[in-house]
Image (cartoon, rainbow, N blue to C red; front, side, top):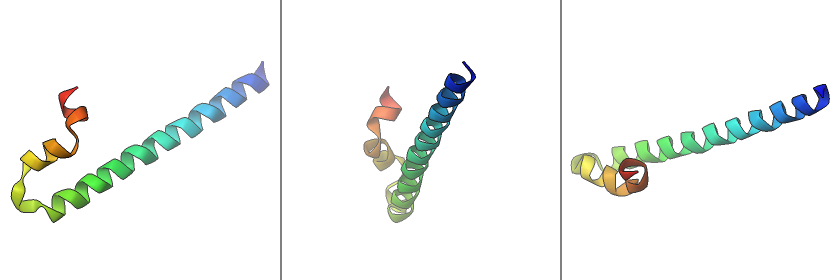
Length: 55
């Protein structure tokens, strides 16, 4: 049982790391986009990620 628990924990830990890495890359891309399109404001930000805002 202990071995299974350790494997599950390792898998979950890797999944969380990948999720955080994925979210981090989205945030970085959003920041780069926001900086390069400063003048257009929030309207373009909604266009960039409509799924996360609408749902």
